[in-house]
Amino acid sequence: MNPYTKGRSAYKQAAVNTNDQGTLIMMLYDGTIRFLKAGIRKLEENDIEGAHRSIGKAKNIISELRTSLDLEKGGVVGENLNRLYTYMFSRLIDANVSKNKDPLIEVRDLMIELREGWKSVAKPQKKSLSTQYGGGNRTGAKPLTVKG
Image 1 (tube, rainbow, N blue to C red):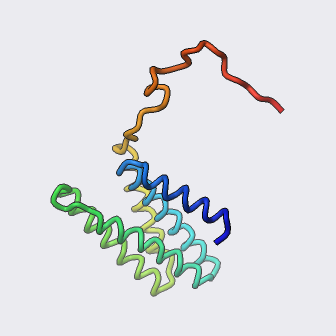
Image 2 (tube, rainbow, N blue to C red):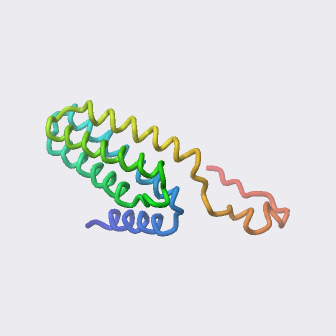
Image 3 (cartoon, one colour):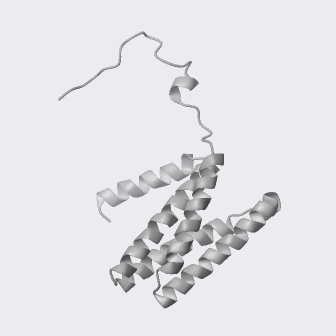
C-alpha cells in the first residue's frame, strides 16, 4: 500500500470515528452513488470486471446500511428502508448477472433521492469553532490575505 493510500485510509477512518450518525449515512450514500456511477461507466466501456467490482462495492454498502437498521426504533420508516435496501440489493444482483446498466441507473436514482431526504434532516451535531468559543473575531485583528 503506498503512503498516499495509507493516509487517505487513515483520514477516512478518522472521519468515520468523529462524525455523527446522519453524516455517516450521508457518506455511505455518497459512496454507493459513486460506485454505481462507476459501474454504469464501466458497463458502457464494456469493462465487465471493473463493473463487477463497482457493483460489489455498492452491494456491500447497501448491505451494511440494511443490517445497521434498528427496526424496533425505526418503526414504519425503518421497515420501509429495510424493504427498499433489500430491493436495491436485488436490483444490483440483476445488473451484475445481466450486465445491464438500467438497474444500476434505477438504484442510483433511488440512492440520490434517499440522500436528498437525509440531507434535509441530518444536521451536524458539532458547533462551529466560532460559536463554540464565543463567536467571531475577539481580537479585532483583520484576516490575513496572502497574494501571489
